Amino acid sequence: MSLRPWVVVEPPDSRGLRGVTIGGETVGSAWSPAELRKILVRHGYPENMDLDDPAAICWRGGDSGNWPDRAWKRRSIMTLMTAGLLISMLFNTGIGWPDASGALTFAQRMTGVLFVLSGLVLGVAAVAAVDYWSRRNFKASGAIVLLGVFIVLATDSLLFLLWSEEREYTRDLLVYVPALAWSVWAMFLLVREKSWRGIPQPKKFAAGVVATALLTAISLAYSTMYQPSAAPMHFTLEAEFGKAWEDNNLPYVHVPLTLHMKNTGGIPVYILNDIYTVRGRTAVYSRGREDLTEEWKESVEKRGAREGEAERYVDELTYTTISSGRFHDPGNSLDVGQEYRVKRIFQLPRNAGYDTVRVELQISYMRKDRGKLDVEEFRSPHRSWNEHDSTYYCEPLACGGQLVHRGRVRHNNNLINVTRKPRYVTVVWSPGGQFISSISSVPFNFRGLGDYAEERRELERYGAARARADSEISLAELLRSAGL
Image (cartoon, rainbow, N blue to C red; front, top):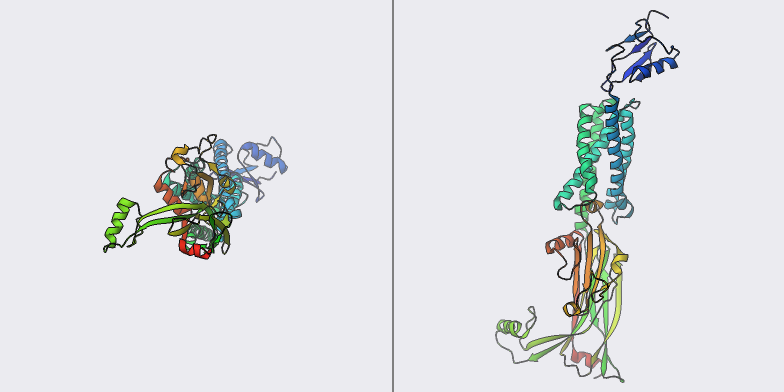
């Protein structure tokens, strides 16, 4: 063998890995003497070659005893990095997929797609982490791992900020809080090692990361704040009496009633609750007092008149419910431009003592671009008088008869679902005029549906509101239309 050393062992790098060249050509790298011998054997050197022979091997940056690799430490870091990236990959994909596949608006779908894509990047980063803490065959592996850790730090910080608004415990909290702490540790380690040094243009890489983060933040802000508040909500509600007719076989007059509803806004909705109520009014007529305000105050305090109604020549107003019902099934949706019309008939005695008849139509709704209602669960009514349903049972003397509908609602931005306890839509209906719609996280009870401040906040968050219409006609006009 020539006196010139053909084998050169390079100084150990930051991980303790030493490069090996033979005849000026890089042939591999070794963590230990055993790995060095394997490389030499593959290139024709004997197995029992003397590693300390200066005529055969040239050692740079230390002799044959200088192997600073701490395999257990390096493998522990690699395992923690890979595990953190893989768990975050599954978590981000799980957050984004419901929005990417089922959100109503394009912006919400794009937000979901961004989270799914971030999950794919994290999967690639997990593979790169194995390479970065081993042979580093791919020069950009450190930069890819850094990008993955940056994504975890950004997304989990966002989740933690959303959680801190209301601080409600969820099982997902056990994922993103430890992941946030992990990302801080991983970011510190990668910055200390300057893991981006393997890429050709680190400044452009950093600029691309910042631009991606800004675009993601803008998309989230648009889908969660601007778009839901900018889309208009309009309804057309009508309730009208038709021409009555006399029943020759019964002492009653049949009065037709037409109810009509149309979504004239820009967003589909769920109809949560609806009721129409027909009431007859009786009154005592008088010559009237000169001061209408004084007459109204006395009527409200002593005779039960409505606080928002005052008439000079009418006093002691009494309202009697004649007919009440629903005209749309709870949980059904009403798309943009869709309308619903029904006709009902109610009966009045020929000698009814009412002076006017009034119909009032009310609906409560929730925007579909804010949340998704579990319709199957919500449509099944619970009867308050059913003793076998202990959750919804209420003494008939206290509650009369009521129907309760309750179902889970999920926000269309899945970030909200991850950082909040489950929310439920609860509606209560009875023919006597009970008309309650609520969204809350608390269990149902008849003594009160929950924290009213929370209910108002959740109703606004999910875009829940009411609309109403009414119509009034004199009994004399109804009887005249029937020929009486």
